[in-house]
Length: 105
Image (cartoon, rainbow, N blue to C red; front, top):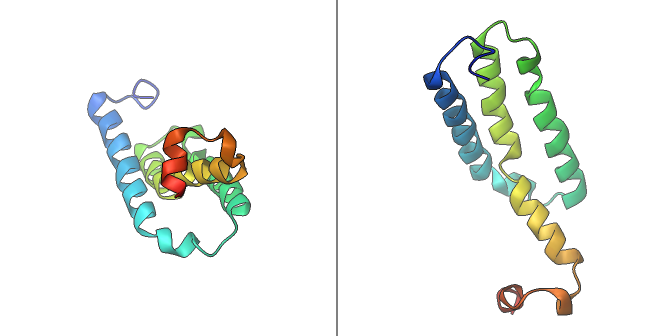
């Protein structure tokens, strides 16, 4: 990515910092998603993440790509937790590992 944008490692660090900051902001907004069904939210996260990555298709300027990556962090912040929740809900209880059984008690 740094080569395509004509920048060095500092720019790459700025991108990952923006993504991390966006993910923290997304996690703080967690309460907004609690009442929504899991599957549509996960599909929305996947689609939203793809849309946020579109500025990388036009690598003319760094600012739109950086903003898109920050928004991708906001959108993607909940994906891991939701996917693990969905897996644990769909797995029969006798198939879960011992650790998961302790957590479910």
